[in-house]
Amino acid sequence: MTQQTIAIGSDHGGLSLKTAIIDHLKQQNIPVKDCGPTTNASVDYPDYAEKVAQNVLETPNTIGILCCGTGIGMSIKANRHPGIRAALVHDEFTAKMAKEHNNANILCLGGRLLSNEEAIHLVDTWLKSTFDGGRHQARVDKLG
Image 1 (cartoon, rainbow, N blue to C red):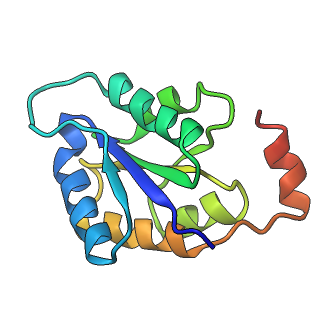
Image 2 (cartoon, rainbow, N blue to C red):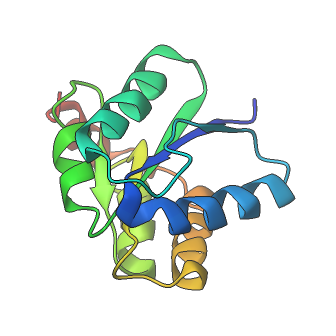
């Protein structure tokens, strides 16, 4: 199986979390595309959700991670694109179900809600999980 690239973006509220996740992924030799930002200056989260969603849709073998203060705004913007299944997760169970039942192709995390360690654990859980298919495929197909 071809290794997936992870497109990752944030706003200022998720920048620290994004940086920690990038460092963690690079230590595992997972290809990462940093979609910005690179400073903690105030930015508009929809701009970065757009960049990551477009990368996921246009680049083969690419999935995404979005980080903002709560993860809510990023998930709302990303899910406006047909073919994107962005899941806001808060714990191991939701990270696992995001992949197993919903085949989420973007993981959304809250930088003001999760520690770096918690978020990295959720990323690892999501990456290690696999889509169950079967009865879940028909439901995912209805998402658009």
